[in-house]
Amino acid sequence: MNTNMRKLTVTALLLSACVVGAHIKILGSIAFDAVPAFIGAALLGPAIGAFLGFFGHMISALLAGFPQTAVIHLMIGCCMALCMLAYGVLKRRFKKASFAAVGVPTVIAYLINVPLTLLFLYPLLGPVIFPLFLPLTIASVFSLLFSEVVLATIPKQMKTKLLNLTK
Image (cartoon, rainbow, N blue to C red):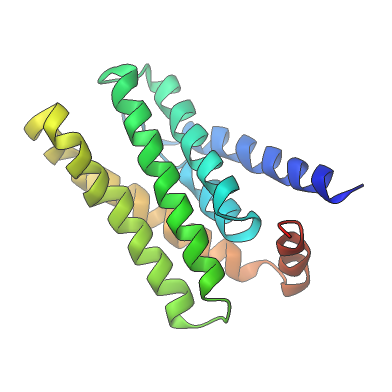
């Protein structure tokens, strides 16, 4: 199987995992669809992570019936894509296994995913977004921690093989 086919296959598997995660809801469209997107951003690159983050959220919103309109969820999907893009870029920058390699991308991803997204939504939704802070934080922190655990348990040989798909 050639490299493009392998990359497409792994991306499809992660996208299907996003759909499964989208069914595990906390509140409305807040779900665990981001875990595979974080893994994809770290292993397959920022662009694929952004794709997975956007479509993972859109599937989650679709399953919830697009509460607060589809336009709001398009904005949230774009913020998720930005989050995965930043996470993937930072994961590539810090290649060695260290506290910075885990901490910096995780903190930046959280800041984009929760406070920045809520800041973008405030002009449209107003104070309605404040109750979303806690469930969004819980989902984001769990997603980030779970994806870091998964990334830490993937054997180095497999990571190298997956990382070579992006070259």
